[in-house]
Length: 114
Image 1 (spheres, rainbow, N blue to C red):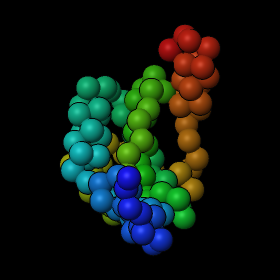
Image 2: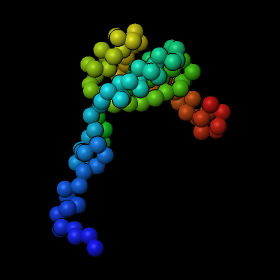
Image 3: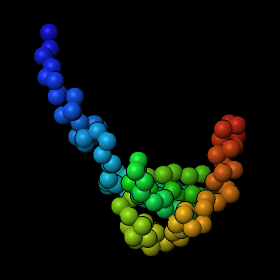
Image 4: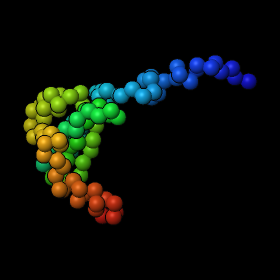
């Protein structure tokens, strides 16, 4: 038999020791993934997505063929520094939207053609 206190569920923590309902911050694993991904593709551009009530600021890297990946990043400024360091352009999604090639890639992938 396991004893469970009435408030134990309120004390539980989610992945990585976070309290449930808190937003996970960007970490070195996110940055490493972005660097490796960008380094293994060409024509990569970065599109920064603003923080929401559900997620922190994220960046979507999109390659020349529309293949993409998304990870958390500290802020718009952090994304801009990341772009300068890797010599890739950085755009704000709220201002420019996503490129057509990303949507086309996602559609191809859904049909099993990517």
